[in-house]
Length: 155
Image (cartoon, rainbow, N blue to C red; front, top):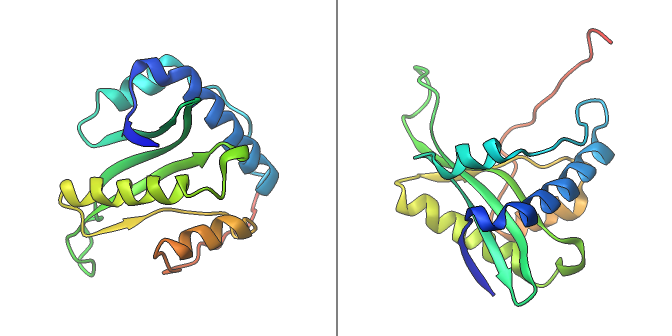
């Protein structure tokens, strides 16, 4: 298993992984998510960015997982420490390969990516209904820091 930065040659495999990820999102929160299509410009913007990358897990069979990482500065608010974080925008391992340590390897590499870019911590979001995802993040050192709450005000 190898973790490396994604290239244009990985776009089709990444589209398939994003489809799987979006199907989960629709399952967990259909009020917010739909199945989308990631066009070439989506990937080009990431490949050409100075503050984000896609890390892919590659096995003999090809790309089997990815982590979309972004380096962000903490909001400039008087009560917040000025910190840099690595934000995992998306992370997925193909369903049939889950539970084999690939996600943890992607997470380890995402943390190393953050350290290399001066990040103080790593952050992501997970659906509370995604019990397996919650366990995965806890196993990889994450803990709940804040809850997001919302209320529908218009249909």
